[in-house]
Length: 480
Image (cartoon, rainbow, N blue to C red):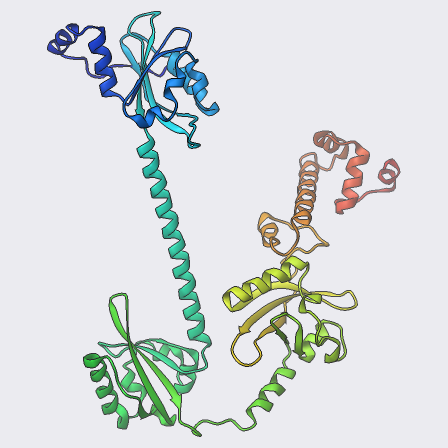
């Protein structure tokens, strides 16, 4: 075992040794007590015979109650090996390296102390030098709390950024974000790209004036000049380039980070952009979608569903699902549907949520769900699209009827199946992998594999048949 003791790195000078020789026992004790936060005298049996400490706060930690007790009994369980080492390695002419130990405190928080020991004479008492580490521990706690606060702020910032981007992308109003100094477009939402008749990539980085007809260029220049001077500008009428028609331009100035930007909203003129029978056409498109579409109320009871969803649910008419809870068909288990609805209520939308849709007659099909929450209007509701997942050999996610093949597939089940089911399937997976490995190592010698796994041959055959491993002949079946 490596000794903790080490020689004193710098021997005192002759003058210092001579001065120290003039000190009597009382002066030496005063010197030690003054240069340490806590000093102890421990006899050869490890009993604390004397203690000196600076400050009343250490007295409140119950240091005086240590007198007459074994030093090792005053520390926590994990610190006891360190006390043993400090006492064992104390020797004349050497000082042990510093070790941190914890003392139980009547205040509830352990008292951290950094100790080093020395034994002036062979067989004599051990002098223990201690440094109070509570200020260091408090600083570490504050650092940890600050880091956690920064992490929480970062998460909130990311959540706010995600909500902004989601709202920006899903907004049906054409919106452009333009740099106030250069007039270059920095962001454009899909609605604006459609209104301008250009791909988003071609709009990004372009001078916003070039997106409009030359007849509107001067008005836009005046608008930006007014924003830079007063921060406000009145709405104006402009004509889009390429004969895309007229639009009302509303501009708002805002500052983000170190740059100033302008939010441009392009509102169509009244009567300038109309779609005949829009509501009827939209409902007709939804009804004929090849993907399932469902609208529920906030209690998750179905208000309407299209024919594709009815096919997946193995039902004939919409009346059979109207008023029923969506989780009656959606989700492999109840916890999976609850996770979908909780995410939808918290974030307002969900994309690429993999689950299963159960038919009324026992069928089950893997599906991908996208959902959105519509809280405005007279009747808040939830909208869901349900798309069948393509079937890929060997790539399907595990379900309750088959074992997952990897840790990644196992973690994907969290939130979709109960913990009891997950633990059971994990145990089955480990058993199956161990049996396959044993058979591979023994080159399919089943007697050797059973011995390797600590199973009887009958037990091995039973598990092989349960997991569908190998081929069992009639002789094996008779043994079982």
